[in-house]
Image (cartoon, rainbow, N blue to C red):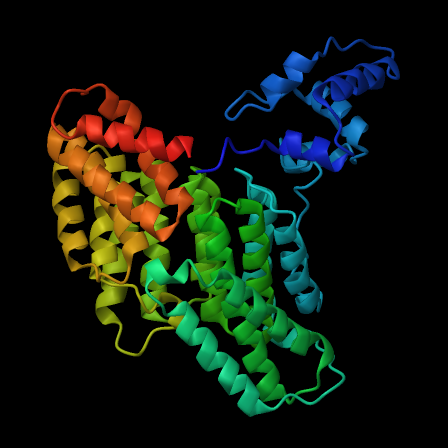
Length: 442
């Protein structure tokens, strides 16, 4: 697994010509002197700010840091720390007719290869979701020129991409370069070719599907900023195509990422906007399930149970074929995520029953989901005092996550290690700890 995730302040220094911590400290002192004040900043203080989970510098120091980077001081209050720093720029807003620009921007961002614990600023994400929920897709502008696109070629692209994205999880990790090539081809057609209106809709849906899938690849490898920009591009393309259910799915992915990163409140707001336009029952079930998870994280038991009930009811009433992006949604997901919610609500006994039942229903093709679900099961077993069984389950989860190449899942499982270390000597625990130590040192 890769080394410690880089803090946005360190990334901002890199963008500023590789500015060192000492140089930033000196710049802060100089910015204070220009205001006839003093700032006793040192290299060590900058280092503290760049540690994961560290306390943010106060507003005065943030204004001085903004001065060093040439950032509008108004953004300090609007976006908050550290979202106003260079490298955390807001995406292109919806409704501007800049779909292709958003698709290309996602590619450019990914080339920076930035591993960040941050995604979009909560205020920016909420604004993006609100735009999607209120803008009329018919207003999306389009302009095409160049060679005419053959609809049969679009059909071939659709079939090929569907086969790639439909692969079992273990094989899907090897498709990243192919997906990038298809993405570049589709965006190139949107950028330079001529096509009929129906073909244009198909191309935009295809671009959205590719961007959404690539966003998940980035998310699985903890490239959160790149994932955000691909999902923003997917939202643009879905909006231009008038595919509201797909747009809701993209917003749901953005919300899920927030939940994964521990930011429940922004996720709830985004999911509320997504639900405002979602029609398909399976899609609504997924959105309600993720909303339940967010409510559980912040201890809102009643709201959590309302969303769980809504998720189960919507899935039970689904009769038509669901959208491709949520075709995998099943009772197994409802069961396991219900159990995860119960863990967060300090009800480990019922949680374990829900999780084990859900895991047993999960198809083998969904190994990434299985790795996540098994980590939930391991946690519920640990809370019930079944340490040896929990350690064996956690090890199974870890080995599965390593096999499919999802570093975020490995990191999730490694978060269980401190609790298991308290039981070293219990059967299976030492083996799990050794495997975790090896994985995190790699």
